[in-house]
Length: 196
Image 1 (cartoon, rainbow, N blue to C red):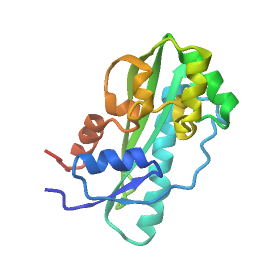
Image 2 (cartoon, rainbow, N blue to C red):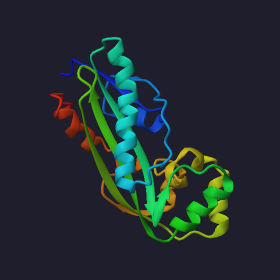
Image 3 (tube, rainbow, N blue to C red):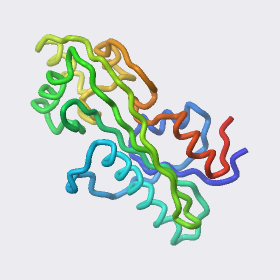
Image 4 (tube, rainbow, N blue to C red):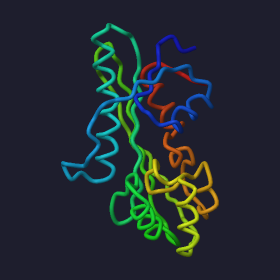
């Protein structure tokens, strides 16, 4: 039984949907942090750092109000030769999808949980290998016209229309959506919270 308030430090509708899917009662507070990779970190370092910073930003705000909560932060990137975040326009979306099509890439999600009582936290990273099918330029352009790529790391969403451009994956499907649920459960267990 969960007897502590859970807060999701994310504006992602996909992460909200995943937490609802497992029956978690939570509130959402959008963290206000700079997500640029100014320190030139590796992809795994970056996603863990950003997930922790998102959770910490919200946890500090809540600790000032003396609220007893666990704050969840997450950050997802796509990696193939370089880190691919969210495309800023159609041209960048096309370049990302052209780069990914017909080959394997990694989807990495950093995840962090912080207790507002003492601001102590745990963080981890999940990596899933994804193979995207070969796509013609016309197919890529048609997918971009759906507008689905624009708020997604790597310019695609596996849980939507993007499901038809993914050939196979090796690892956690929910990680590719944006929140590795099994890894989250493991982290929550370390705070004495058991979902099952």
